Length: 327
Ligand SMILES: NC(=O)c1ccc[n+]([C@@H]2O[C@H](COP(=O)([O-])OP(=O)(O)OC[C@H]3O[C@@H](n4cnc5c(N)ncnc54)[C@H](OP(=O)(O)O)[C@@H]3O)[C@@H](O)[C@H]2O)c1
Image (tube, rainbow, N blue to C red):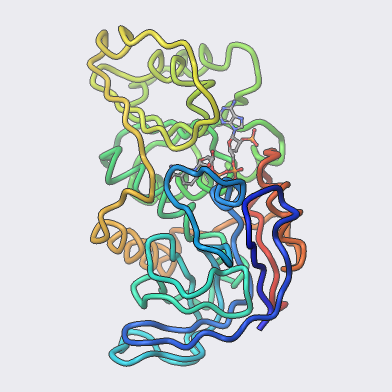
């Protein structure tokens, strides 16, 4: 089968299109014929080497996320059958290959049904982003119905799903964006208020909303925004750091003044029962109409290197996916 493989760390050029042997599912594993694979910033960090959470053995086929059709099941698998439409979220699963390939074999717990109303392209946009959004909102952020959450960076893969999951759970949602396209996505996702994070005085604008303030912040760029988040949260507020690309000069007194909690979140650290719980909740939200992933750019599998360049450039306009079989 065709797959993207790397045999060393380095720039995007280390990602090569190769032919490899099709993997076979063993006990409690399924094999999925992949139509689309999701591309995440984490895969570019892993490719460059020195990523804190995961070091692959070579040769390595990247990719944790995708969507397609089950084409073989191992012994003991009863929840899924050959022919089921599914999405894959395999960051914490045992995998024989990654999802930048025609087929993947992984633990059945990492594979969930995709309703007919959600396309394979959309299914590929779930995986890492949706488990990050769910874990940040509910397991780390302890979001409750009626609370206000600020998604600081709402237009990306994680943000657009976080907006929808928070609305579905009965929260009030404020989102920030950097572009008009991002604004439109976040509006479609259902945010109640939207601000531009590259506009001067946007923090004052959020503060001047005549309401109960912000209970929880999901932060996509903590090195730029952490101080602003501490200005915005209410007393006893919570800030969950989802994304960060550098360090900052930060006054810890800001946390004392409000007894605010600043928490890190990394999907890699999720206890497996919480991770599996998040996927069951996502499957339910998809089938009940609570989640509609937004797909932006689609590139063919052989352009995986270009896809990893694009994902780090920012200006998110919906999720970037690799096409393996046209829908
Ligand atoms: N901790 C984890 O387990 C985990 C899991 C998944 C992702 N992440 C990280 O979370 C971040 C977001 O991931 P993603 O997949 O959503 O990436 P993405 O699709 O590339 O989106 C990036 C987001 O960051 C926003 N952004 C850019 N400048 C910003 C600013 N000054 N303030 C606030 N937001 C800003 C972008 O908004 P505009 O483009 O509209 O400006 C966009 O919404 C990345 O750093 C990623 O590595 C962490």
